[in-house]
Length: 239
Image 1 (cartoon, rainbow, N blue to C red):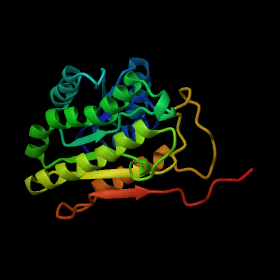
Image 2: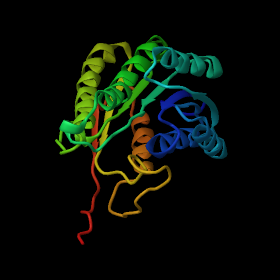
Image 3: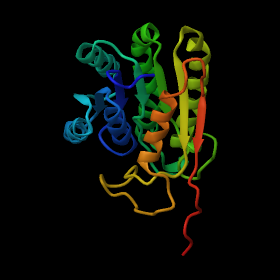
């Protein structure tokens, strides 16, 4: 896909992987609609996208609500004349044993990590099928690997993987590509204070994931990579 002038919508774009993807798309000349709950974070990302050479509009919203999902897609189409690229990246976690997991946390994780991707994708599909678009689901190796204390997160990513596989089979012959990107350990502030990345050099970076998205968009129209798993090359340092 030609990035120059393409319309892209990135959820969870306020920081981390979402911000890196948005900036990378902007650097390629895309017009990016940025979505997350926090407007200040989105404005930061928008400045970086514009500095990289792209266009950016901000759409703050809570993607656990259908109206905000529909509104995000409508904003992208209104601002940029259509929609060719959708990156479902919004996600939350939580390190809590099952016995201590409350209904609110469970529902928040499932609604953000799975429900939002479903609702935004559903709203976007009529536009993507017109343009021969590309949908990216930012999943995790946690969707396949059980982690003690992260049952809600792992369950949400496992469900996202299967939802994405079904979606891919439904729309691939309509010219819409659907790709799951499942990274392992990524050095971001996910699950910690904003901006507090670990700084441990063995991990993947948010820019690694962003580069994978851009590379996949460069795949010829007749080829479809439906799943990409990413792992750090070096092992973690041991104390």
